Amino acid sequence: MDLEAFEARIARGELIEADDFMPDAYRRQCLRLIVTHANSELMGALPEREWIPRAPGLARKLAVLSKVQDEIGHAQMIYRVAEDLAAPFAITRQDMLDDLIDGRAKFHNVFTYPAPSWADVGVIAWLVDGAALETQGALLKTSYAPYARILRRICAEEAVHLKHGEDIVLTLASGTPAQRAMLQDALARWWQPLMHFFGPPGESANGDAFRWRIRVATNEELRQGFLRKYVPKILRLGLVIPDPELRFDNASGNWLYGDPDWDEFWRVVRGGGQRTAERLSLRRLSRDEQGWVLAAMSPENAA
Amino acid sequence: MEIGRDLDGGLRAVLREYVLSLADDELVLGHRDSEWCAFAPLIEEDVAFASIAQDEIAHAQMMLGMVQDLGGPGPDALAFGRASSAMRNAVLLERPNGDWAYSLTRHLVYDIADDLRTEALLRSRERSLVLVAERMRREERYHLEHGRTWVRALAHGGREALLRLQHALDRVAADSFDLFRPIAWEGALVRAGILAEEPSRLWEPFVARVQAEVGPFGLTFTPGRSGPHGRAGEHTPDLDGLLRTMGEVWRSDPHAIW
Figure 1 (spheres, each protein chain N blue to C red):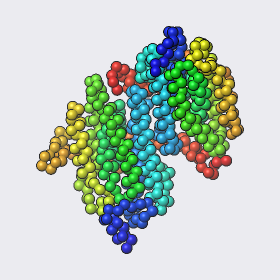
Figure 2: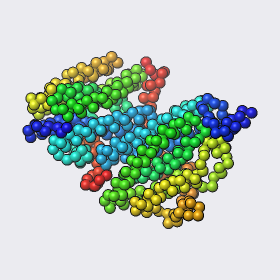
Figure 3: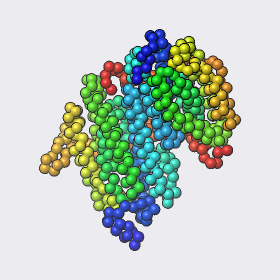
Figure 4: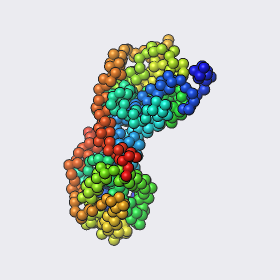
């Protein structure tokens, strides 16, 4: 009865607020998606964080700091949405952070890769954030209203990050031969993770997540949107995309691409990312070393 | 407005030295602040320290532009291209972040020093110094409040936190004289009306204000008139490490556009 009424609301295109009735399965699916997004914003800040101390030039240092601040700010806002959803399960933000740090929670596979050069900072901010904007832009139409609202602000800020990344990339592309080589290497490193970004093609669009409009676009639709926007821009810079099979198919209007090694994708998704352990250990070290601060702030310890 | 346009060469050189000391304090502390981003005990503090770091680095950028006007290379070359012996920051600011108590205590003590210093700058006859002090004071107000809030909270947070605070204050006190140590050129700047009074005269008011700030929590701040001399370019290996990291990419090709 309740489920029928709920699905009728969804079918009418209505949005669901935090205190509206929702089936447990809907709540859990939203929560999983939203916590993963929050975790990803937090973990996504870490590769670029490594470059804050080394950013070449004061303006770049300020820009990278500001971007990392935004990403962590996004995590903070999204965890708040997640906390409301998780309240009936008595799960707090600290539980979510503990799950992340102790390796029990998911975050986006793209943030498990190393960022060994300054050019990686540009490629991440331009293309990884570009890919994220593709996903998040589609989620603006999600049925869970608090998440959709927060995404509007996030997308606006991500658009600024894209400009920041594009500026680094353009500067390197028009720089010295060593700078161009650094950029080409970074693109080569990030191409496969970018193809993996949206997940494998062919997933069913008939499941609950689509029926309840938690998700609205398939992996392949998102990937094609990304390729349509960025492949021409990358090629115009004279860079080489490391996929000899990549070509535009006029008949379907899609980009065709070679197998980006989906076995590797599954390996990373199952927790085997190159830098996963190292990045999580940074947050764990922070929790362990600064744990006394939280203890001092807790009501029991306050004098 | 270009700084020191009507000053003679000798005065321009000492004014340059003075502005450089202010800029380097902000640059080095801003760099240390940025190291807390994504490592702080709370997500809210990752964000707060990223914001404070941006303020400090932007102040440094502004003042290094003034140093350039007074003679020398541009802000990036000054920030990324100098050896530690050419840095004029107080040693207090180059110390590694240590624990949360040390970082917050150092920040509060420095922000109090900065408050006194920029307040004095408002009385300079150099219009550009007044403008920079006004801008800095608008933002530093929040840093001061941030440090004060944390020190108060930790001081009420049980025995371990209180012990850590006192230990931090002792370490900060040992390095504090560097902030206001009398320097040979300061008299010349006062006589020219560029500074309303010698910066070293702020030492006693500074100590009194820090004591008034921490005293109510049963904490003590008892610095001596000794310690390192960063303004003369005498620094620790910690600053060498900081500069090596900061300049790693920029120094790989100082003539490239990054």
